[in-house]
Image: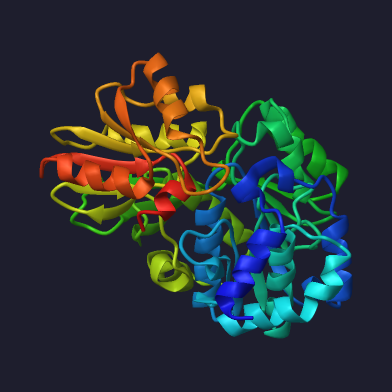
Length: 431
């Protein structure tokens, strides 16, 4: 099979949560355990950092991987979903897995895997672990797909677990309260394995402390150790932002350059610095110079995209993959800090999100271009228009993201702002 035929096989034969939703959700690790037994337990051949959370886990994963690369470690990186190329999910030292490796793996194992009937995500986890094992990475940074306790990545025994934050997302699978969702995320905490918690909330902190105590796992709340001060305001002419980083009120890094411009990276940086400090205590050779080099070069080194990314100027065009209530709150807060003549928003969603709570966050003085991402799970644009009208948001429906984006660009004045978001899949179609 060719690479395209291989992907078509995976997409057509196997369910994938990120495309079709609940049909692909499996509430146990049996398939992944069976796959890895067939593959010779590849996940036991390398060290790992395991990262869960509602928002920020992608950025945190990329930053930690970039720093480890800068420190000279051969570093695997597993993330999801991808934006434009499936191979974005699996990287070593920033380079995507080669197409022939993907094709060879599927051809080699499709017959034996058929008895297990793995999901798309389980296939991908097996591929990533097998690739990292064969390539003998020193360490792999592994981002969970959804949840934690029952996520396919959760068969590893990592050097460090990280939980970035907890918000209301995937409630149909993880629970309808912060405490219930936290319990699912806390499932990645392993016996005597340190865990870093990126955000302290009164509803979730007791859950993490209880689980850590149960597992005899050292627990570190990031805000007890580090803080980050953002310097200046967002400037589209300048790539990224700069920060002062403090360690227990003592300045550690002055004017640290960060190519990711979203203000929400402030919390992610605090999580990253705490995680790196714990890794240093476990014997990893990570210097301040490695950290500076890794953070400032994270986009170039790991290919991270879609986080408050500037796509154009005059008009200013920004996209962001924030796709739940907590993520959208951060994005809207940053939009409100910008100066522009008129705001245009290209917006689409998937159909298993809390539509009402997200729409209620959007500004009512924007011009909207509602659209459906090109996946079966995408929310019909006509439904989105009708629901938006109930909260006072007026806009036109468009049959595709491409059409909506094109109309927004044609309609916008050079001094306007166009924002593209609502779903990772919407952003993917404009990149």
